[in-house]
Amino acid sequence: MTWENINWDEIWQATQDTLTMMVFSMIFTVILGLALGVLLYLTSSRQLLYMPALYSVLSFVVNILRSVPFIILMIAVMPFTEAIVNTTIGVKGAIPPLVIGAAPFFARLVETALREVDKGVIEAAQAMGASKWDIVRRVLLRESRPGLLAAVTVTAVTLVSYTAMMGTIGAGGLGDLAIRYGYMRFQTDIMIVTVVILIVLVQLLQVLGDRLVRRISRR
Image (tube, rainbow, N blue to C red; front, side, top):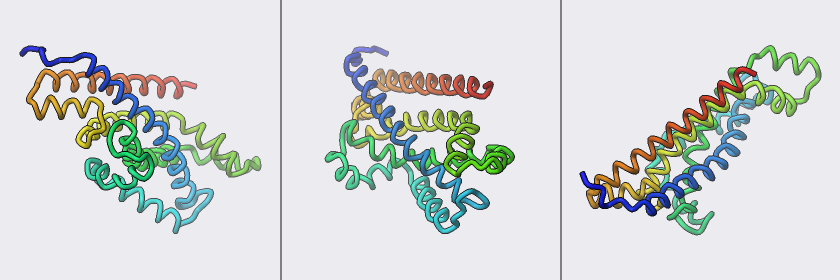
């Protein structure tokens, strides 16, 4: 196999686009997903803000968004993306569908992490007169840090695969490069390079996430 089709400047630009999509979408995903996950936990059965009707609605919406394959979801939300960022292509147009696809997934992971917090710690905080906000901030979020960090890691890895799929609608990045050159023009060398970069990126994210979880767990 020859490597004559490789344009490293173009690959570097595509890598930067993928990282930009992942970082910005991850920021919004963590903000929205954390808030949604905490709300799901608090309004569920036998929790601080038990509201069965609200929990059912939130849970239903989250389940619907998680059930739709991302490649279909990113096309379905194009009108919404256009309304928010005035475009449906490029890095800018990729962020809304990435957040919509990843935030519900992250919210469920947050809810699961919060459920693992020892009930005795929560009850002790209530007995000392802590407010509900203090319990959320100083007990739930603090005690669930290893689980939350693990959730961030899993979501970041998922977003890498989502950014690759965004290439099918012209979002740029390594996925777009793989489709335009590796698939449509049968340039196997470009396909191999993009796949290797994505694998390395995923491995780095996973290793970094695992180390942070272990460090937090020891404290």
